Image 1 (tube, rainbow, N blue to C red):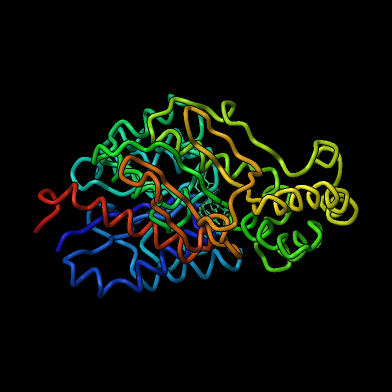
Image 2 (image 1 turned 90 degrees about the vertical axis):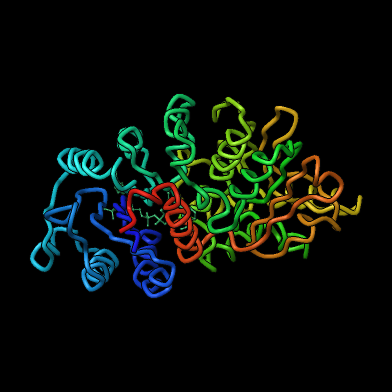
Length: 381
Ligand SMILES: NC(=O)c1ccc[n+]([C@@H]2O[C@H](COP(=O)([O-])OP(=O)(O)OC[C@H]3O[C@@H](n4cnc5c(N)ncnc54)[C@H](OP(=O)(O)O)[C@@H]3O)[C@@H](O)[C@H]2O)c1
């Protein structure tokens, strides 16, 4: 059996689901000759780690107890009594992660998995990567900070995976990487990478007012608690930046033109979430309705997309032919069209659920398994 040690940073929706997947896939992995050995779990306040990271692991009952505790809002410290673990807080937690990485990085390829939504993990990730650890990310922030940090994290390119940062479990990063590695130059990427905005834009085609559609999206649980976090386009811009950097573009967030679907006067600094939902949203109806109608008159539909082409990376509304993969999009799916030399007139199209804890965690798990090939010799017994 080949063992893959795993240290998880972030135990919210995605992190907990990852632990469930690890436990549920035990027999599948065993048939493949693999064992995932979770040795530590961290949240924003502390790190719970086994007493001896070289020999011990958290058993499945303990992993499920972690999930139960975190989903009920209890701190990791509440679990100290039931596992053979130590708890480290704040700065000491970071020091311990680095110590464990130093112990296991080069010998086992310890997978340090970032399922947090924080930029505080960036320094830790750079350090553990330098210590020979594999890094797996669902968190976009480490890849969308300054280009120097991106360079450092991706220096050992074969030791990092980040499929779930764009399109959750959809194989967007894998497809782009495979095209690039085969020498098939990518000419153009256009994608609807927000489930919320995909839903909103496709519902507008039926003539419903923008405010009503956004309210419905919120009711269905598609939006962030404050829908402006989706409507600003910043999350799509982060995904676009990751794709552009994957293509080798040395750009930062400031280089991306982002169209927000609401003006500054309706922004966080000017009105509360309640006021935005109550009176702000409806102020946007007329303008969006006119744009939808103008597109429709030309046989087009409006989509909120990222466009990466000719050294131009932009995020916002575009009119697209109704009869194109993006034009046909209904509901909250993500759709990405990739045009390359081999896929020039008929693009490579990737479509499916682009969010959700289950699919995101599945993408993370697949990344962890994918990386184990790097450590073929060192871990076999
Ligand atoms: N959910 C999706 O559909 C989806 C899709 C694609 C990508 N993602 C990405 O996946 C990541 C996780 O999403 P989520 O929905 O699981 O978020 P979440 O529920 O907010 O959970 C975030 C977790 O990270 C922990 N955390 C915060 N700062 C930390 C730090 N410095 N070190 C270690 N842990 C830290 C939090 O700790 P506390 O528990 O103490 O607050 C929490 O456990 C995000 O980056 C998100 O953008 C999510």
